[in-house]
Amino acid sequence: MKMYDILSTKAIRTKVKAANKKKLLQDIANIAAEHIGIPNMDIAKSLQQREILGPTGIGNGVAIPHVKIRGLTKIFGFFYSLERPIDFESADKQPVDLIFTLLAPENNNGTEHLKALAMVSRVFSDKDIRAKLRSSESTESLFAILTSNEDSKAA
Image 1 (cartoon, rainbow, N blue to C red):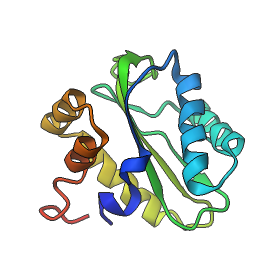
Image 2: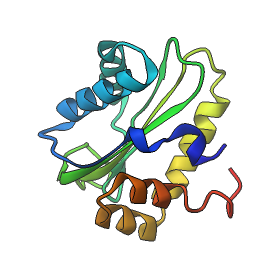
Image 3: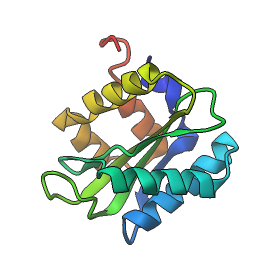
Image 4: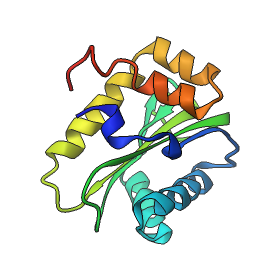
């Protein structure tokens, strides 16, 4: 699995203004609904319920909300960089400004979902990539950064 299999430039937003986590997840659900044809309320509800199970902030200003959604046939990714960091209840107590949301098929046995989650986690564990993402303002450059290591690393 490669990043460009799950992410497109249309699924990237930069310098987003978000008041809090709940409003951000609603905004992500609205954008996702346009791309995948699933009602935004279903996506938002799933994302909110996932956060109740445990916050998806992984540290270093990064969150990876991820849920399984009924009706999907493939995994979709959505990337947001925020204008100002917000609280995401991360383990390191740091606010989040880089968010990569994964929406996976509900009926999948979970292996593809886990592979995608591992791939995204690897990308965001690189401090140089995080720095580049924070300094970029165009969706094209963000896409290029997120997919830059595709051919040099096996998923």
